[in-house]
Image (cartoon, rainbow, N blue to C red):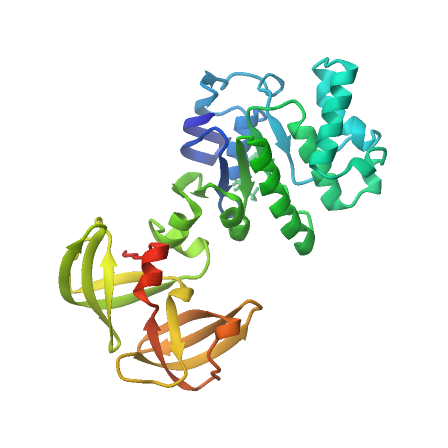
Length: 361
Ligand code: ATP
């Protein structure tokens, strides 16, 4: 539905977008995720037609729209700031794009009623925007953006102006609406959790380029390179020794690894070929566990800190030369204190297989 090819944008001497190629399939929810200044908003604005690319091509539904003005692209858009018309009621705000498109009065009424129901604001139809909460305003903005059945919905940090509680509930709501309407969606965010929760695919951007594009689970558990690995969530980089190279399996190769006295088996993916005696393994904090007492076979460790974070308890431990972060579900977290000697192990390989985490740098 959307295809971007070799997109570039310069603002004078500033290279905002260096080289971006990506696509969004019909019905897909794709997120541009990156730190401030990585160029994601500029990409979105070029897709919307609010900014002219320096070079490159934008195709919507197979049509080259690169030179087309914004109003002819027929795209729905929701911004961080609600951008509602303050002097129009909720109903009229949603009706606005349809009046411009010269829909008939009864068709407008039917469509707006349907959208009010979709965003659960029927009871607010006659309110003015300033009588609504932030979350309600964003739901009006969403209804307005969807009113004319756009082939593409663009969302520019739509939830970031809201407080944490409203943001969380609106996230679920947004995903639900995207699913029910099936609208092809491209969203910009710098919030990793939001991207992981909402997206079918995430396009990670850094310094005007695409670092990696993939399903949330791939981007999280198989980051291609340092930037993606460290930008999304916490990660440990561990040096391990290869003790033995085992059998080939359907999805890779079994190896026996050793890390500070802890010997464990691991399945390397096909791209990850063992040619050295040492490997760098990148593992998420939830892929390691802490035993309350040290036993032979585990890696000997000392607890540096324990932080209760709600659902998860995060422990920082020293293992040999490494400082390692380990997460446990709080309901199952070991009871350990700072300074305690503990054992650390990799989690059960069956879990590893499920999540597909066999990372190698
Ligand atoms: P943020 O989350 O902070 O909006 P971003 O990833 O969306 O960041 P952009 O807003 O696309 O990044 O900006 C990318 C780079 O281009 C930045 O260095 C920014 O200062 C620059 N830039 C963006 N718009 C303009 C402009 N109109 N004129 C000059 N420079 C610009």
